[in-house]
Image 1 (cartoon, helix red, strand yellow):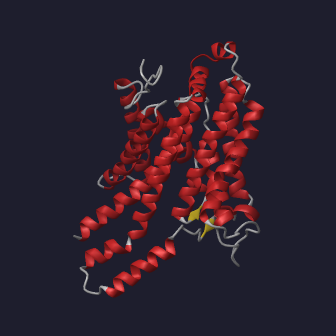
Image 2: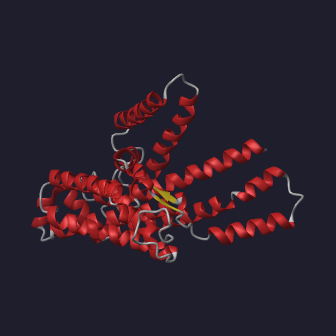
Length: 341
């Protein structure tokens, strides 16, 4: 039974990580899948959200920290919302400068700002604690849940060891339930918005922005709205990650983990489809986690194993594009509520 409990605990950890990536892919889907905005700086908005939430809701600097800012200890909902707002404001500034230019310029600007953010996190120790990272970030409801578990275990000393072990991991189940609620709420809100007249304008701009402009639509304003909304959602994903990991370092926001793999998830799952975005997050992260076990049984060094995992993700993407060019779950073309194209 201990093996079963270990597998269950790992699956919960896997699902939590996949849910965080689901929020990222939903944000990217607003930008690319529905509006055609080529944002390859996802990691930057993800990092801004994570560090904002950690600084707002985390503890004050310790005696061994270099940091001299933040640590206000505010409730998690305030940190969570602050993460989305700050990421959205950064996107507003970046988009206001570049949104009227061609797509290439937005891509260059977004990857540039992501690298600037990564370097600021690494070097501005007074703000982010530099390469030492932020630690002891509080998890919402952690102490009440753990206290309840300890009281329960103390009142039931005759519990089988496997059941006691499962109970000690109860907080991960609670956090997973909260994440599923966030993903479900975001999915519902985005579905309502993207199936509304506003969402139809976004798709019209993606397909032919000249035609949309000829119909009197302010193309730049709609693009900016989509860019800000998607980036704000990415900031929320950063907050969810920070309060679960309880530790942040610059390595967590490298381009591969923060941008490349998110793009693979969206393209593989189905760009322009929110269900596809969520499915792609679980599918690709499942492959990435599965190859971690696979490489343990191969005579490879750590560098070779890491390279093999990247190759396998690339092969998955190629296979999906060959067999399902629109992704596993392709975009649904709606003309109205009664007719589908």
